[in-house]
Length: 282
Image (cartoon, rainbow, N blue to C red; front, side, top):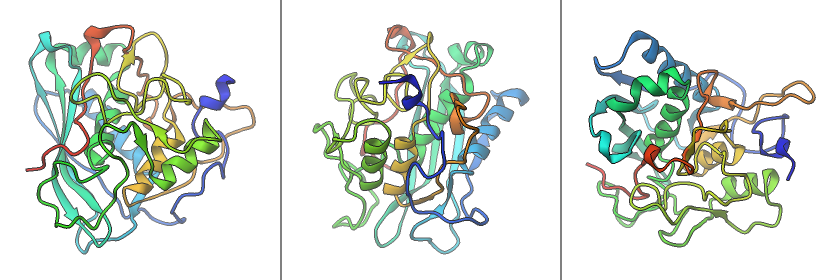
């Protein structure tokens, strides 16, 4: 597969997802603790601004709710090999969807300065923020508390199947990477926090995709349109790609200039964990 086919958002109209021109009604509010510098906070804000240009609202709006509050904080556990992790801590329900109303992104203090110095901080944050918005954590009802029962909402993935079947994500995957696919491959290895919550390392879009479960610090990461489209399956209004000049490459895509992530399959000590799909919500 040609390298250019792995680059997200090259031309307009590559994917038809719900969305319309106009002002965004979706806003992510950050609550950042005192562990972070002004420069680091600026990186986080730039990632949020970039995401809000592609995710602009809710397919089923809830009165008075325009977006989640995400806490950004730290932990210290250098021996674990975890760079960062994310949680969904609160939900809002509409007729057809469960949305994240609050969550967190937490960095290991042992890695924070190094990630910033090497230019990885933005994409690590973007990866974890995606989990806090529902990627891999709100794909199905397994283990979720606080949602109405029976669950009248998205059922995009069966844990242990390795097969994501959300209509928008699958359509994008067919367009972007594998025209004959009947599902988007999901990671089944890596243990709790990696399995059932990320795209498979071996999927057709390549192991350099931001939302696979491992990070290699020796290659740049890309944000695929499959990932963006999967948020439409979660009930978000998602805008199509912005056109680029002919032949242009968008290596960093919607995660912004700070997002020079490398993935980690080659370096186990760099392992990062999101939450498993269906993480318990409190």
